[in-house]
Amino acid sequence: MLTTERAAADDAWFAGWRARELGRIERAGLTYLDYAGAALHPASLILDEPVRLDGTVLGNPHSEHRASQAATRDVEAARRAILDFLKADPAEYGVVLTPNASAACRLVGESYPWRRGTTLVLSRDNHNSVNGIGEFARRDEARVLLVGLDGELRLTGAADTLRAAAGPGLFAFPAQSNFSGVRHPLELIAAAHDQGLEVLLDAASYVATSGLDLGAVHPDYVVLSVYKITGYPAGVGALVARWDALARLERPWFAGGTVDWVATGPGRHQLRQGVERFEDGTPAFLLAGAVPGALDLAAAADRPRLARHLEELTRRLLAGLAGIRHPDGRSAIRIHGPVTTVGRGPIVSFTIEDAYGAVVPYWTAETASR
Image 1: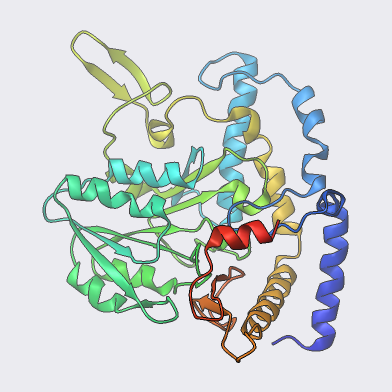
Image 2: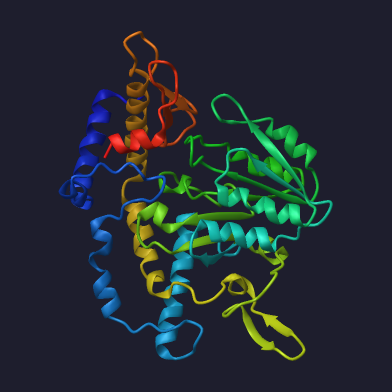
């Protein structure tokens, strides 16, 4: 728990930052609680956007003219910014730009070399975009195993499940639960590697408030969405993949931008090398130029202090929810996941129960909160 003085200092810092960057919330008369869905962009992030867009001519980066080359430079700068934000070595990792984290999950799912004898290990706590990878695995007769959850919705029995899955395959889990806020141990990455499994780490929720150092942990694939971190630009996500893992993926089709040439008669084509073979169609090149500034702003926003502030807010919320009771003393709130801030992020999910213990429908609570 933070000291009273430090918590007060963090509150004051955040109040100033909020007034400066998110004053529109107050002007709109809103209380915004959907940060697990999307962050709100800081005002300073978009002040220079009209100047940036009006100050250059950007063309489709798949061409070779000057406007195209300007867009290509923006796309490459976005890749470098994502690597820098994750402290990833460009000699080890490449960045495939996608519309969002879900598209990055699909890229891995549809391209992974599933076969009978390979195994997909999923946690029971995954975003549905990660769960969807199981459809590709089952289609190709791969085995699918699940890591269970305990009463606090933390992974349990992971070591046994990974040993049972030993051999070629993929383990996919979230660094931070999008539902319960639980932060699952990143040590599982090395444990899975020890069993011969590759690892897909869903970092979309985690990196919004915590640093991920790919120089310290080495998942094979990381998926994220930029708007989850900075609120803007939406429509830019990434599959950050180790080069050796990326080379093992087998594209099931091709599209504009992923091939050097196509011979329609004999049905032959040549995929591009590196990350471009995975970028179907034209990347969001008008938005790519905003990514470096957005991630720089996020990194400069005193993230350690922000993390402390969010931990304190989460502690207060958990304590407040626990204190909501019916006249007979029965708790009105059932929290899903940990009831303390240990090993969890700033996401709190709960169910409201009436005086008889029946669940209050979410739409009733939603209507009452408007």
